[in-house]
Length: 370
Image 1 (spheres, one colour):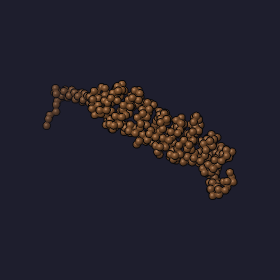
Image 2: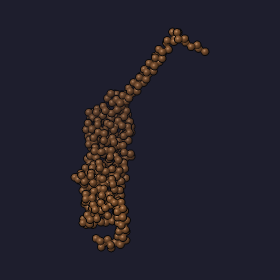
Image 3: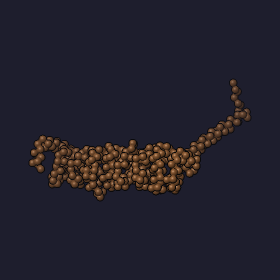
Image 4: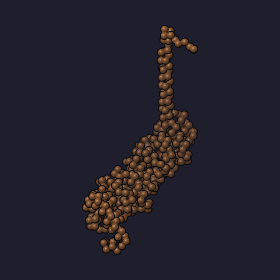
């Protein structure tokens, strides 16, 4: 057993000093550990120009980095190495086939502006999570088209769109016509997050590409702002790719919205939100664009939605595809106003179902009515 130190003993006075020294030593170790971690992080974020050994290693493992086609653009190469973090470009070069890089890199350095190279391409290279979609873009997309995309995209926009799972973005980029690349870039720069939702939920990349190829960008932007991208994607799912051409019903309907900003954002956008996509697709396919827009303008999106909810849709389409006089009489505001009453709406629904069944069973009645 060790006898306790008496309070009057000199050794007793050393205990607080020893505890303080131990606390000081612990604090110094923690500070040194934090400093080393911070130095390690700052070293990892260093550019290749600040780490000559890293540049030499990059060229040693990827000889095409010192090819004549690359060295012919020294200012572009310096800008690339100055802004890329050490190690990130090595990882990208390891993920991308050497033949692809050897062919694409000189052309990108030649055609992409230096400012866009730094503000658009370098952030993609510094984000390891985006290396896979970027490699797919280099492998499948024409280099000159990719250069146009990099030159026309605002900083930070392409990063959002490349988060799309799979290769949907690459498929759409390849399917977009050459003269519509500017349209695609306008959508990417305006609302990349909404465009990402549309592309992710669209049932096929060919349908999304047709939407870009044949619909004016202003109309798509207005619809993305006023309607849900999910609803637009669901609506596209009810049309075949052959129906999404320049003479298709949906493209013709959206073509009437060019220059009609108020009509698109205040009426058509809410209409797409209120009515089920299947019903909207049936209306667009069977009712002319002029008649459908006339009904929407006269009754409003909520009124049309109320009519479609409380009336037999097939009968409504049968009447709306007739003369404009019957369209105004049967489908205008009075019917919508009557259906504000729940009991009247239920009665109208039952009556119109009976009428539609009779017309379907006896087509001669429909001919007499017309």
